Amino acid sequence: MFYLRYEYLSESFPRCNVFKVRDNKELLHYTIHEDLSSIVRQSSEYPRYEHFFLLDESRFSFFRCDVNHIFEEEITIHTLNELLKEKIRETKNNHQIWWEVVMSHIDTIFVDWQEKKFLIWQKGQIFFRLYIVFLAKTSLNIFDSVYGKTLDKKNINLIPQSLYTLLFLRNNLKKENFVLLYITESYAKAITVKDGFYDWIDVLNLWLGSLKQMYKDNWVVQYRYKEYQAIEANPLAKELVVETLEFYSQLFCKRLLEKNLGGMDIIVISPITKNEHFIETFNKEYRKMSNNYIVPFHHSNSLNSFGKEREPEDMDSLVFVNQEDKIRKFILWE
Image (cartoon, rainbow, N blue to C red):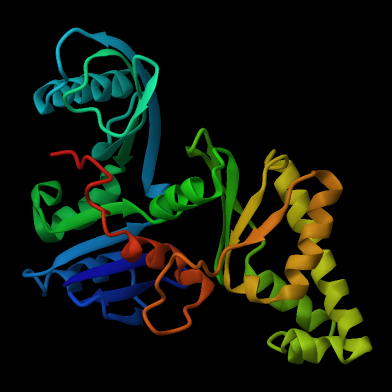
């Protein structure tokens, strides 16, 4: 059994979604409205279990290195570890990074121009992509104050919250470039994915609280949670709702342009994806400035929802617990 804690980073509305996953894949879910320090202290009360923390991406730095080298002898674990140390040292020196490495990941492997799944025991002309993830020391200190040397603890895992969703979408959409757009009650952030990995993270000032206020200003609060069919059946309500969403979408597109986020498909992860009028109007406004699409991500035939309809904002956690090979996909730095 393991615990998965998904952080919602907010000074005014801190909370953490906790998923307790049993061996039989039963998933229990609850929310704790406390800050990360309190959540970490509570996790220490269960030392026998494995703990995964999906932390906000702002706590991490992401780097990609393309390695193209002739290996005269077969690559071993020792060879790979030495290479990792060298690349980590180069990255720290070149970018003045003094944070701690929490994870590295290798993919896109070619041996003598033939694609391969594994790097160990290969030799010849080898190309692969190496991704290195650093965690800010200020964030690590929160865990170290409870666990001591956290990175030495085998049962404590610190992971960027969108990492598995990013890889899942990249592999399933067969796209290397897109934008992950999160819209929650307390923040909105856009994660630009280029060449299949993190490129940039932007915070936008149009979260769901902004839309709530627009509904109030236009006297349509009572229709915020109405079903699509109910709104369609009332022409006046539909007109007011669509006008509100169009204004919100126009502002969002303006912010996206200011951040140079146009030109790629946008995948929205948010409770608002259940609002079909929003997706329609957002798509219409976005296509005015781009030939790309807004795609809601709140379900997938390849994901187990554990016998319950989950909220769109739970998608990162669901993707994670659905990954049976979640540990083997990564080389966790020790």
